[in-house]
Amino acid sequence: MVKKFFLAFSIFVVSILFAQKNNDQQSVAEVSEKLRLAMISGDKAVLESLILPELTYGHSGGHIDDAKEFVEKLVSKKSNFLTIENTNQNIQIVDKTAIVRNHLFAKTADLGKEPGEVSLDILYVWQKTKNGWKLLARQAVKVEKRK
Image 1 (spheres, one colour):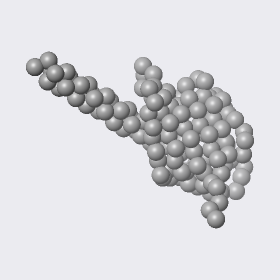
Image 2 (cartoon, rainbow, N blue to C red):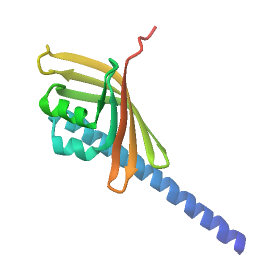
Image 3 (cartoon, rainbow, N blue to C red):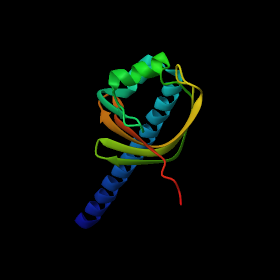
Image 4 (cartoon, rainbow, N blue to C red):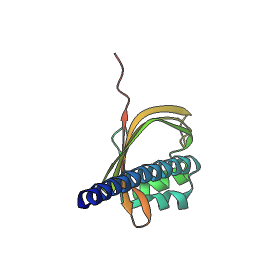
């Protein structure tokens, strides 16, 4: 009887942990989509609600933005995304951290520049807080040329 109880209890605990991980992955996918849309719209309030004050945002050219610069560039249209398409997204949850990798293809119209296109591989680091998942870090790299 005791063995059956422990077996049932173990299955119950594993089920709860698996469900929690799936819920976290879904939540991270949802905030990732909110970030994509906010980067296109330049909505300051939404952008600020999705990031941590300690944000470090790395560009493929090597420049690093802090949280304030990240938001200011999008709101002012200095960085102006007309479209952003994310593909091949992979979400890995480790405790209260989510690692998201995807490919980003975007059409841009940055202030003072000709319209352009970017194709980048991106790494996002999200942290689970009492107010939900918040972006802590982002790094873009130019896509490796296929041989």
